[in-house]
Amino acid sequence: MKLRIRKIDVVIIIIMIVIAGFVLYNVGYIPEKEELDIPDIQFIKDDKNRTLTVESVSEKILWEDIGIEGDCEKSNLGRFVSIGDQITECLGTITIWHIPTETQLYTYKFAPIPKLPINPLIPGYMRDVSPEDEGVHFNTILNLREWWYYTVVFDEDSDLPGWTATIGFCHLAWGDLRLTFKPDILVVILHSPDGKEYGGLINKQRREIIGIFGSPTLEAKSPGVNIKYEDSWALGEAPEWHVHAEDNDIDKENEIIIDLQYFARSSPLWLHSSRLFDKGVGKIANYIFMGCEVTGTVKIDEKEYNVQGIGHHEHSWSLGVLKLAVKGWDWCHLTLDNGWNIYYSKYYLTRQILASKTSKINPYASLIITTDQGETLTILEDIEITTKKSDKLFLLLKMPSELGINAKPSISQILLKTYEIRLNIDITDENTYEKIWKFPTYVGMKIGMNTVIGTIKWSNEDGDHEIELSGIGTIWNMRRL
Image (cartoon, rainbow, N blue to C red; front, side, top):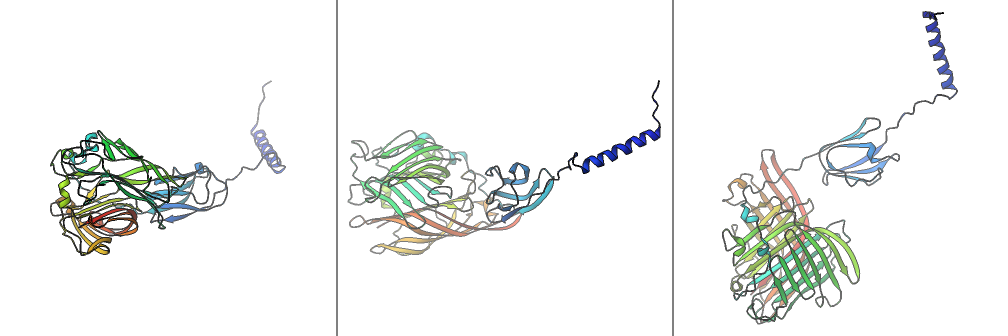
């Protein structure tokens, strides 16, 4: 018997199914589909630091349920959305979504960072340093002076945020410290933003003669950096060095041990050399690694601190006879709040008796800016330096405590000059260690922490740009009669 279903039967069946479903739903056998809530997350937008910070969150929610689109850094976010979480390094448009409900929560717009013009043509030999160049040069009959030194500004993630450290190994020429037979210098100095100071400088007797016979207090070998001064030493080849410094009898009241690893992300730059091309064989030469990544520990009176930050490494050497010409220098390594670094140095060939303005075009001054830890460089050669404040050293000799620097491209920097770059900064000593050798030597040094404020301006196809600059750094001044 064949079963025949009429249209009226189909309609009746459908009506019965609907009625049955309605009854089952009302008695609770069929649960109501759960509707997802859209979370309420409030952010604080910080244009200056380019961050979005979670101010409040309405419920427990996973970051994996929040979509973040745009150019930003979100690797620091944890599992759950929490007050204080930060989305950093935001550029352009940042869009935030709730993924489960496909709901767009917010759109934030950050201005793009204008790119500072860089020197377009830096020959390869200007950024090439060999292991032999890093090694010793003073072990000749010419009795060269030679310096290796490392500086660092510890960042906010360190146990010593905002502190600075300077470690220097210095082989002076005989006569640099007039009638003083202790020309080997070790510098181990720590300074804090609130005025604390540890370590200092010591110079000790050299036991070698004309750089050949006997053993020096400061020992050095090649290739690479391989130097030792009693219990302090530095060892390595670019791009990595291990620096270990102990103050021993420098600081009579405190025990200081600094142990740091330096890593240079970028190639160095030769600042000066008596050779045009093969810079490392020059009798007068120096180079610098800017924006080194630094990690390690600092131990102060049995308490150890973990530290990290951005540092510089410089190496220089020259003939001993230059002591008759050089009457002073200023070296500054500056770490800015926006991540840039500035190196400034100036050698003085006349006694600095009165505060004065120096020549605009000065072959003995260097000013370098890097926005990416030394990968690209902006070198300004037209430099005007003004000593705004100074302290009396001895007799009529003065040591600067505040320098004003105005810099721009020189006439020879044709391509860079088209951008009309103008740098104006004030560098002020904040917390420094002073060492003075009086009669009959008459030499003074000041080493420590400084601050910098100012502006940089330039123009390009995107318009006029002006950026305010601020930061802290290390400084090393020397003056002599």
